[in-house]
Length: 115
Image 1 (cartoon, helix red, strand yellow):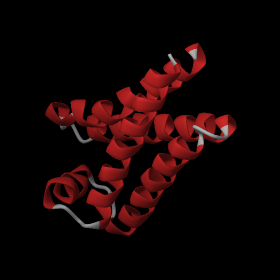
Image 2 (cartoon, helix red, strand yellow; image 1 turned 45 degrees about the horizontal axis):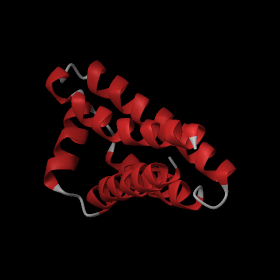
Image 3 (cartoon, one colour; image 1 turned 120 degrees about the vertical axis):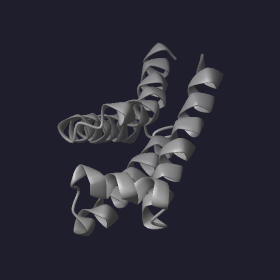
Image 4 (cartoon, rainbow, N blue to C red; image 1 turned 90 degrees about the horizontal axis):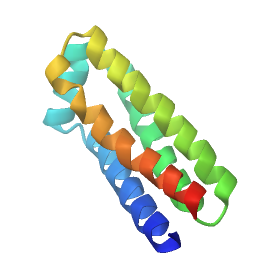
């Protein structure tokens, strides 16, 4: 179980880190929907920073478990907020996207509990 936990955690961190980098690089496929949802541009760097910190926290959590738990909680709150934001914007077709980032984070956490 420890191997599965490590692999899923690293993959989740890379996936969330990719999302953070996409915000920092202002990837069109990321920032256009943010603008469409009504997320102010001044928030974008903070959102990218929160994701980057969460990704780093997941990796550090492999060695310091409490950091991993805190990162998981932070990312779960972040992506739950993203789901709410997308739903409030009535972009229901985009609802799966934040869930695709939330799922591996939660999966890594659950594997960590079982390890």
